[in-house]
Every structure is written in structure tokens, then in C-alpha cells.
Amino acid sequence: MFIAMNRFRIAKGREDEFVEMWRQRESYLDEVPGFREFRLLRGPSAEDHTLFASHSVWESRQAFEDWTRSESFRKAHARAGAARDVYLGPPHFEGFDAVL
Image 1 (tube, rainbow, N blue to C red):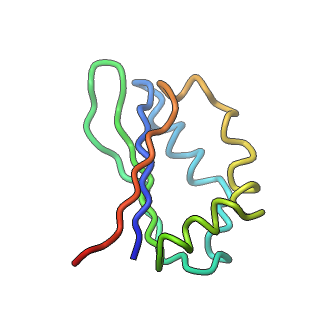
Image 2: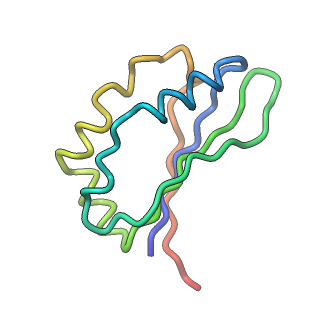
Image 3: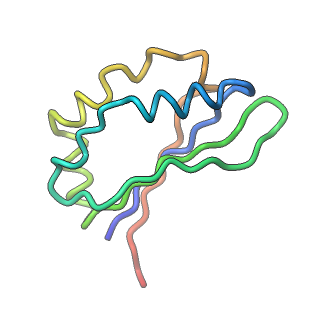
């Protein structure tokens, strides 16, 4: 199993807009081989931002990497830069292989 996470720093006061963007987007993940589940997580707030993380679970690292090179990935991320002022910088990716 492989877990892929992207952490996002979202400008204070823009949290609801960020969540709604994710709620409305077409992810195409359900049609991707090896995809298991997705969660959008809300974390702590700081003075200027709130931390969010996208959390997806995959059968393997290879399944995740195959998705990142797929047409489904390109379609899902086609509008990624539409609301740049919502984000305080680019997302921070972290990938984890399950060991237990």
C-alpha cells in the first residue's frame, strides 16, 4: 500500500472556498487502477493560513506513479492554478510506503 499526501497552506478566510473547489472538481480517481480512497483533511490554523492535506491511498507506489502520468491526472489538474490567491505557495508532496 502507498499513501500520497499533499499539504496546502490556505490563506486565512479562504478555507471554505478551498474546500468547495475540491468538492466541485472532477477527480477521475474512481476510474484509475490501484486507487483505493481519498480524504481532504483540515489541520491547524496559524496567523496567516490553515493547513490542509489531500490524502490518497493506493494499492502500490507504482499504481500512484502510473496515475501521475495518465490522462486522468492531466484532466483532474487542468484547472489547478485557477485560484492562486487561495494558496500560500505550492503544495508540499509526501509519499509513504506502508510497512506494517
